[in-house]
Structures are given as C-alpha cells and as structure tokens.
Length: 324
Image (tube, rainbow, N blue to C red):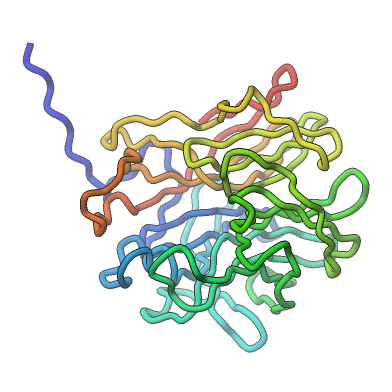
C-alpha cells in the first residue's frame, strides 16, 4: 500500500478548536481572561511572531505589547488593540502597535480587588536579543475600566529575574502572588500581602522541575495551582493555598497531548482560569504548527505562531480533569 503523502501545513489556516489568533503578529501567548460588566476581556503577550524585522536572536519574543481582545461570550473574540505607554501608565489604543518599541511587556495578570482592577505585568527594559543578562520586574497597575491603567510601581520580590505573576485571595484572608523566579532555578516563589500594596516574601511555593506561568484558583472545594513545564501543565492541589502537593506524581501533566504539525494540536502552555460554578475554563496558548523539535532555521516564522485555546476543567474524585 502506498502511504498517503503528508499534508502541507498552512499556518494561515485556523488550528482545530482555536478561539483566537492575534491579527497583527500572530503571536498571542500568556492569555489572562476576566469577566467585566461590559463583557469578557482577554489581555495577552503580543509576541512579534511574524514581524518582518524583529531583530536577531530572541528579539521577536521581546519588544512585545499587551494585546487586548473582547468577547460577549468568552468564546468568539475580536481584537481591540494594545496597551500603550501613556501619561502615568498605559492606555488601550486601537490598531497596530508602533513598529519600533523600547520596552518589553509580558504575561499580564488581572484581578478585581472588590473596588478596582489590578494588573501585575512583567516589564523588561529594551528589546533583548538573548535570554540571560536582563533584569525582569513585576509591576503593579490599577484601573477602573480595564482601558486606562495607572502605574503603581515594581514589587519587591525575591530577585530581579521574576516573571509571570498570579494573584489570589486565600482562605486565611491574605493575598498571595505566585511568580516564576528565574534566579532560583525557574521555580515558583510566593509573596504575601494584607492590602495588595505591601508585600512580604513567602518563600518557595513549588520547587523541583523547572517551570513557569503559575496560576492559582479554587474549584470543587480545593485550591489548584497550574504550572507550565513546556510539555503540558503540572497540577498542584491544596486545602489552604499555602502548602501544595502535586497531582499524579512527578511526571503527570494535563494538556500534554501533541500531534503532527498538520494536525494543529500541540501541548498546552501558560494560561489562566475563569471559574464558572462547578466547572472552570482554562484559557491557554499553543504553537499549533510546531512539533517541539529544534529548528534548523531560526527564522522559521511558521513555528513561532501561536493560538489561544480553551479547555474545560472539572474535579472528579478529587482530581482536576482537563477536556480540550
């Protein structure tokens, strides 16, 4: 029998079940999704995957703005613009971001504190062309409408190599901020606050295998912390959001399935969770047309493209289950 020839990958086609692609640079990553009185909002890292001249090395991952998309139902999304530097902070601007930028914004976390919105944003000066040697800080902003953000300043965390904030109010009434500390082996550290203004170090929340993108939430009577291991997401559970135990053993992950690039289904990466009653929605990103192998051509933009997907989370017999 003659084998069927492999189907060519069309990076402009929609990947199976994707819900959003960034229309500017096709590099939507690290999505955070919130529900507001005027609808659903998605804020994400707008990587410059298809920028014609982003610079050498990993410059295409830097120089990113925060992209914004809007939805009426959490499933069908429309591009709304980017958060651009404004007097005292950031403001939503429609259309394309500037072609030339001098700062990098990554991985927004957005919460509502009962009075206003707060965003915890990773900021890097300039547009680095390599990973090491560049300070990374998590900076707090506040907003009344998700459109205009006032800069409150960087947080005093464990090092100057910190990214990927996640914030939640815990059962003891205190706020906790989990984040990736690259100076500590790329593990998850935690800071603690009573008022979201003064933060104290809380040590290491999750050690072991290197990871990034922590996200904590309550569902089904327990707390859960997801971490991105670049091969799927590890699941950690807790009764108090302070002490965590990994679900399923050292190698267990959710959304670890992958296929051929033509199938467009790859491992789930860094995302956020919206709880909807007894279930939750996990918004995450993938590289639909990349099979995870090292690239012979470092400028292969097909492999850089990304898409946002959503999975349903349920707690079954004390285990967190994810259905794409």
